[in-house]
Each structure stands twice: as C-alpha cells, then as structure tokens.
Length: 199
Image (cartoon, rainbow, N blue to C red; front, side, top):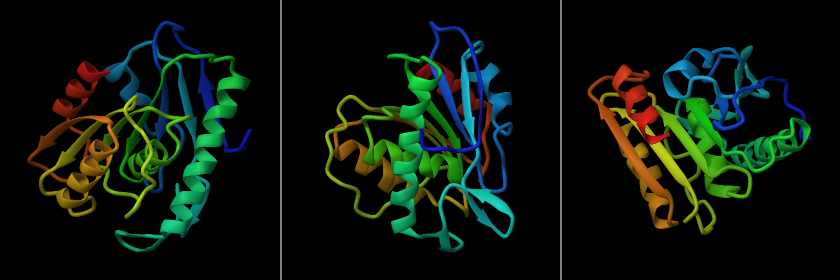
C-alpha cells in the first residue's frame, strides 16, 4: 500500500466511504466535520498530504501561488490512487463506493486522480477546486461522477480554471454537476446541501 499517514474510521457498510482530502496546511481531521452534513454514518479515510511547503502539508508541489508543478501533480495523483487501492484491501472495503471529498488543494489532487486513475476513483466532491493538469490523458470517464462547488469571486481557484476542469471532465464522458456561490475560497452551507443531494 502506497504509504500515506492517514486515519480510517469504520462506518455503515451500506454508505459510501468518504476519502477526505484537506487543503494546504491542513491535516486528516480537517474535513471530519463535513461528514455529518454529507453522509452521516459513512466510513472515512483521511490521509495527510505528503508534501511540505514551509511546514504546511500539501498534496503536490507548486512553483508559485496558483502555478502547479504538473510533473509532481501526476506523481502524487498516482501515489494517492495507489493508496486508495491499498486501503480497499487493507480495510476490506471490497466494491464499496469511495467518494473523494476535497477542499482547495485537496480538491485539486482529487480532480487529478479522477482524471488519470478512474480505476481508483470514480466519484468526487470538489470544493474550491480548479484544473490540476493542463492536458490530462484522454481516458474514458463515462463511469465517473464529479460535483464541483466554486465561488464566483474566488481569487485562489479562479472560475475560469474551474470551468476548464468541468470541460475536461465532460469531454471525457464524466457526469459533472456544478454549484456556484457568489463568495470566495470557502465551503458554503448551500454547497454542502447540494453535495449531499448529489451523493
């Protein structure tokens, strides 16, 4: 199993397993509070981002604010995908639905895994995410579903980049659901409610 420090909490086997992916500087516990809003009783798998930027945990390197190291994005996407596949075995998850729930940098790595490793991850809820890769491979994502929630005034994840991500997913056959709010880089109550409905 591709080792990432993580926490696993067993839940109702009838419910999806939520793969919780924190934002920059966060940790495995950051998104636990979302579980009751999205899928109460779900099992949770919460890894820690393996990259350190000035002591802040991230999922992949960046060259500057908003400028991703695309080679590292690919490496880390495969690392996370391998971790998810290993966790299936380790925790006996079988064919249970695994749904990534990511915020910001966590949403971006979830988007990358969804684009390049549909074998490992087919469903994702992305809060304040953007395009992680300029030119992902042309894989068949017709069995994938992605929920995108973005702020129209988000300086960290510009709407144009979120639009591009929705386009990349749609072109590859993924089912894409979008939720927009007028604010910035945040998770809103409306976005959570819409995500719960989508789940």
